[in-house]
Amino acid sequence: MKNLLSTLESHLATLPVTTSVQLSSGERIGPDNSAVQLSFRSPKALAALADGQIGSVGAAIVEGWVDVKGRARDIMAVATGLLQGNPVELAPTWLEQSVSKAKSLAMHTLTRDAEQIQFHYDLSDEFYALWLDPRRVYSCAYYRDLSMSLAQAQEAKLDHICKKLQLQPGERFWDIGSGWGGLIFWAAENYGVQAHGITLSRNQFEYVQRKIEAKGLQGRVTVELRDYRQMDGVPPFDKIGSVGMFEHVGSAHLAEYFQTIYQMLQPGGMALVHGITAGGVNNGEVGAGIGGFINRYIFPGGELMHISRVLHDLGKSGLEMVDVENLRPHYARTLWAWSDSLEAQLAQAQSILTTQYDADRAARALRAYRLYLAGCAMGFEHGWVALHQMLCIKPDGDLQHGVMPGAQSRYAFNREYIYR
Image (cartoon, rainbow, N blue to C red; front, side):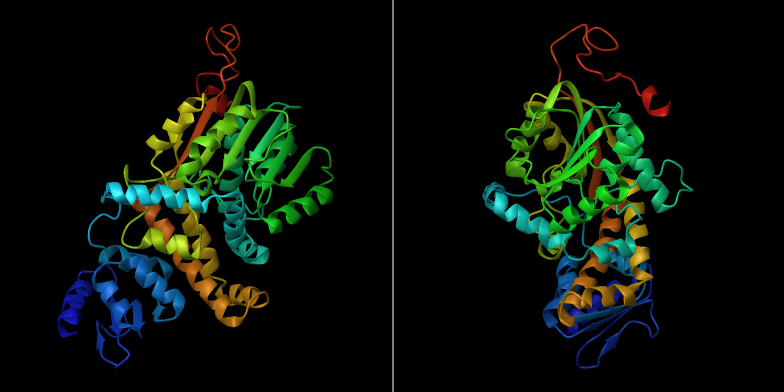
């Protein structure tokens, strides 16, 4: 234990913010009144801290084995400083890859996907409303102007997607994983499309149903509780959007996901897929226990893949990629905005969760989300994860269709349409 504490004390001295550690025995290392204060009741968690296993320490915090005091941004600075090496550099072995593929197949059945989505998104509508923007857009914002507020940047993102898709009045638009309806409402109200969303979250479904009625958008906006793999009998759409969805698909089903988009898209139509991608080419999750923490407490069944793998399966489906944009630092800023908003309202957040769950589960959920939001902001800043928008077309085979011979779609094959 003395060697462990000595090693840890030398680590603490190199951190960018003052940090102290207190043991259950009362022994303490680090300066008094430090910016970040950690109190350990678990020797195992202390060893994980010294070894740079940040995800394991996060789990100990959620479970109540470690108490932490300090600003979320300072806590994440400490976490980064204690990491030993780059958490996306380790490549999995052949055996690990085989196990991961088998696990992905098992984790993404129709039943388990519904359960996993409900685990996250049905936590509490009121809790999410506390720290999201008024439209409840739970995905990367687009800070077109750096002076934008979160709410303005989320509206800019919705419009950015609609412009990329060149939505036209009367078109049928499908949103796969429509959340609280931000994109389908924006597309219907500002671009005149017939917007249809699907979700596996009962809370989101019921919220959007109420909002459709309140806005008087019956017949122009519809939503269903439906899995993307169960679209038999539905005619193809002119345009398709999928925002923050394919992270839940699983690597074993990614090809099927893009094949579904291909099948549900009219020839000549366009689809935009927006989602989180892995920062490392070979790793399936962020190392140092961080990916395991997210899978356990936040997104069970979630899987990240490098953009090269995503585009490989997109291309195999028959879709043609025409534009890719990386918005990684935009997501870091979005997550910090969510984190700052939650940190400013912790008492209210605890009260909201306690009305739905027992005090222990409410406290654990709040601790998990505090670490998740700030930790993910850190991950996007460092490039351990990324955020890509992929615009693709389904070529219709008509070489004379479009702005120039061979376009085979309504895509402009330049970016001027975004700025008009």
